[in-house]
Image 1 (cartoon, rainbow, N blue to C red):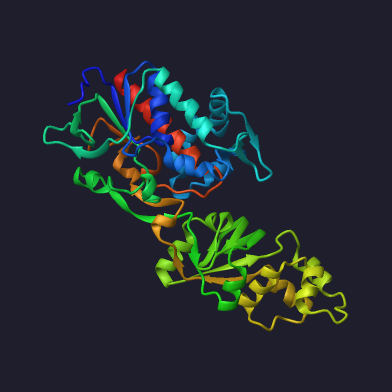
Image 2 (cartoon, rainbow, N blue to C red):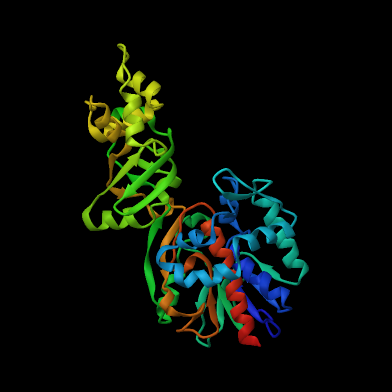
Length: 404
C-alpha cells in the first residue's frame, strides 16, 4: 500500500496529456504522482520526435480549431485556453526554442523530443511531482481505491482526484493499447469502438507499379473525396497510399469504405495550375517525344506521377490536351481498405464526450480524463499534440476548481 495520505491527484499515464496535467497541478502547489505502466515516460512522444517533433501549427486559429471536425465544439474552449502560442511559450520556457517550417508547422529548433522531455521531467521533479514507472493501472478495488500492478505486486492508492491520460489504441508496443476501455465501460461510461486514424489505405496497384514505385513520394498534390479536400504530400506504399495529404482527409475515406467497400479519391497532381493553363502547355508539339518524356517536360510530371495516371485512367491516356489536363487534375484512385489499427499514427473512437461533465466522468465523479483516450481525431501537422497538451491542462484546471 502506497502512503497517499497527502496525495491530492493521481495522474495515470505519462504522455503529453498526463504530464501537462501534472504541470498545472504542481504549479498550483498540489501533491501529484504520475503513474506510467511503461519503463520510461513519453514513449510515443519520443517516437513522434523522430520525425522532427511537430508540436503545433501556426495557421489561423479558426482554421486550426476546424481540424478537429465533429469534436470542434467540445475541444475549442480548451484550445482557446491553451493555444498554439501558449504551447510555443511553454516549450521556450523549458529552454527549447521553436521555428515555423515552410508548411506552417511548428518544430523545436533541436528537431527532437528528448531534450524537451528531459527538461520537462526535471522541472516536474523539482516541483515535487512523484514519477512512477512500471505501475500498470488495473481499475478499482472493491473499496474504490485505484489498483496498480507493479513489479513489487499489487498496490492501491486513494487520491482526492484522479486524472486518466491513458492514450488511444494505436502503437500498443509504446503503451497505447486501449486496455482501459473495458474498465471504464464496467463503470458505466460509453466508449466508442477504436478505429485507425492517420493511417494508410489499401490500393490494388498493378504489380509493375507497386514493384517500381513503392516508397516514392507524391509532392504537393491535392486530394478530394466528395466535399472533403486536402493538400500536401503523400507516399506510394506497397499496400497503397499513406502520408499527410491522405491523413488530412480525416474520417471520410474510412466512412466510405465502411459503407460501400471503397472510397474513390481524386488526386490533382498539379493543384497550382488551372486546367486551361495546363492544357495550353500540353498543346505544344511533342516532336516525336515519348508520352512520359513529354509529360515530364510540359507538365513537370515525375515518373511515378505519369504511371499513377495510367493506374487511374488506364494505359492509353487521352490525346486531346484539355482531356489530358483534366486527367492530370482528377486521377481517381480507389481506396479499398484501412491499414490495421496498430500501424496507425493515432486512433479514432474512445471515451465519448457525452460521457463527461467537462472532463469529469459522469459515471465516476472525481475521475477526469485527457488526451487521446477521448473520442476525437485530427490530422497530423501538430493538431494531435496540441489537443493532448490542451486537454491535459484543462483537466488540471477542472480538478483545481473542484478543490477550491
